Length: 169
Image 1 (cartoon, rainbow, N blue to C red):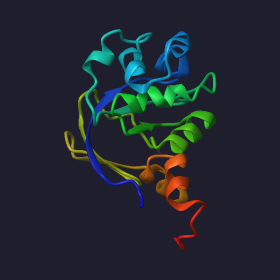
Image 2 (cartoon, one colour):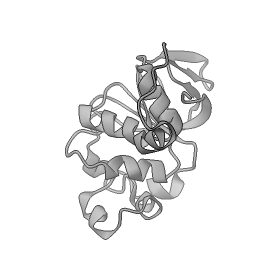
Image 3 (cartoon, rainbow, N blue to C red):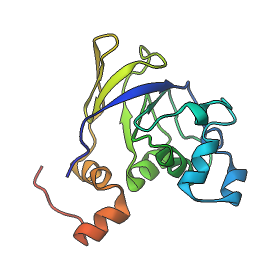
């Protein structure tokens, strides 16, 4: 199973969004519940963001998204808000792997022409900006990563299959 295409509203951030901007580390001491954490999403950058996010929104960012500490909870909080993907010019290596392992689709592509609120059609390999008519080719993800994201993360994948599947792709 691979990650299916979906429609999304763009929520735009810049370069070097670190994990403490995504969810401040003091919040993980209060709770690890995604439904609790979602109310604090990006509070350090925009106090109104968590109240305005809608399930199906997609984060659009610049370079080095998720830099800083290796807090897995920075992915958990994003997923708790109903966000299924992050499209960025680049990710920190740790955030990228945490995203895949938890079922959040990390896409790398040129985000420079996407504006806040743009309507996007998102699928691995291609993001179409319905608002502008432009298309963004994203870097390909290995089939196994797409399968892991499609199943909802590494734990769900192993619960279903018990081991890595050889798909022949």
